[in-house]
Length: 472
Image 1: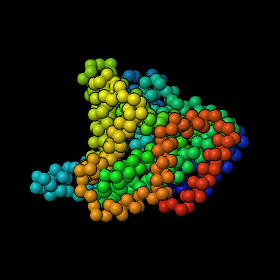
Image 2: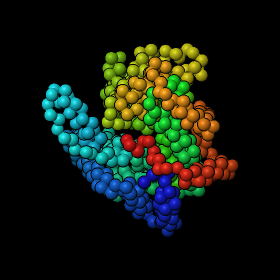
Image 3: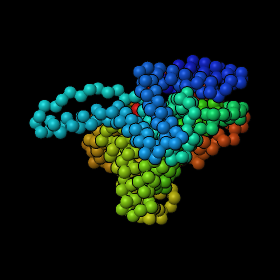
Image 4: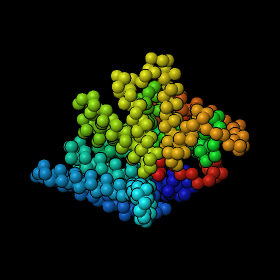
């Protein structure tokens, strides 16, 4: 089920809220509230593919049992380590099989074919929606319990609620158990949190429908075109740069808003990434929950920057490689991660500064975003060859199709230009939804609701358009 769908907006969400707040009004225990959330979360997740529920439930049970063994009174160090290892193995093997099996087998078949041997048939695997998010989230629980950074969960129902929380289940932000442990046990439902959450949700919904979907039309046409010219290539790549930001940040805003309405405080996931002055700065602002997860569970355990410079470079390289392959099982995602690793290592070598750090701030921002844009070409392209052709088009070295003038007429309409200007204005604006919603006034609520109403009307004229990060 998708947040920006009629089924979710007009059926699932109203029914859920009526039932949930009826239970709150009746004063039922939080364990029953959590059970109610879990049931609806499973309906939400299994709406299109019910069999995916079994996979998520198995992952939930595995980490719950591992956490019980780790926190058991009298458990030896060996037993605790073994339980953690089993949890990590189960999660990573599940993620590896469903996400990377076909990619690995395809690569193996390519090698076999080059050797002149007969390739073997590869089983088709359907990628479960959001598996990367809930696997990392569930795995963080056992790691934190093992470290002593999080209290062990008391029962399976509570842990199931944590893993399956539908607001952020399929596209984050990645929520660690220790950040919501107390709220799972006892949380308050206030009118202030409700209004803040509603404002968050309305703004996120408007960003998705009114900006991300609109600029996405431009991006799709350019990336699907045959040999676009330099102007069209830059316009289309810029459109995708806006699309992926507004699409993903919109989901995060909606998730944070829904969480607040239920009494949960989810972490911030974006902080004006297109105002970054370096690639290192970009990664402190983009998908912040993933960046912090990789920092705390991979970079620091590997030694971080506490060891030699050489080891620090290796650690940074591994983190960005994992970030790339986490996003998708394709060479484009791997190269995208390594592409960012190159610039981060260069900045680290230059005393944690970009080579253009002495230039005016607006120039630093511009150069950083051009680097990011070239990276997004890898992220969006179907394969390395397509990305290479788009890169050549961006610098004017690619042949131009005879149909390019027709593409120009399609993507430079007055409406497209208006939406691109709106996207640019918001992306570079210092105003962020997270801070804007911290203090909710009547004018702000009215503004958010008007935008929501306009977006809802626009929804009826658009085709099905899921969030981009659902594929991860």
